[in-house]
Length: 183
Image (tube, rainbow, N blue to C red; front, side):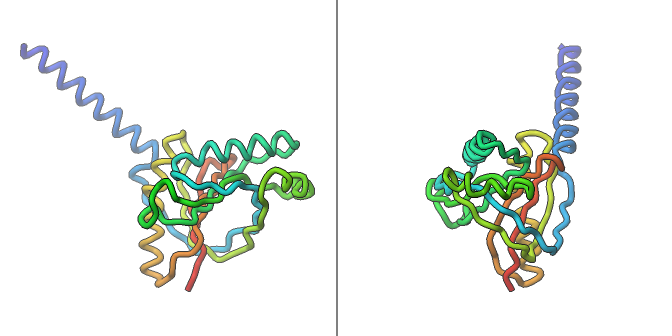
């Protein structure tokens, strides 16, 4: 019985170590830095979406597939979140979800406008923090880390909540969490 308990304890400690290493790898313990800088301009191809923010990945995929069908290769997705999850029921949350057009594809914007909405995110002063994309869990962990830091920075700097965008930069393997600065 003592031998069994010893092996059980070793197994539990090994599992705990694996979990801690995985959490470190995922960035759970990483301190995020919030900076104030200009972001944009971006030309955005998107769909309006109402529903849980956790389901926006399928909308990004639909926009990405539509762009690809038109010969537009995009490597950055985004979500502009128009309602606060603290103040809006999850099924009534509003957002604009899609892809960022690269400069070489701006000439194809009219063609894409037949399928999707288009708009420009102008060069704007923003509060920004970054979180690495390691795997699909990064899209859940990132917001849990980023938004408290951004909210703290807004309170410290006496800023009001502006438009919120998450920019998924796949080549750089990071998500930018962005709040427009409103003084």
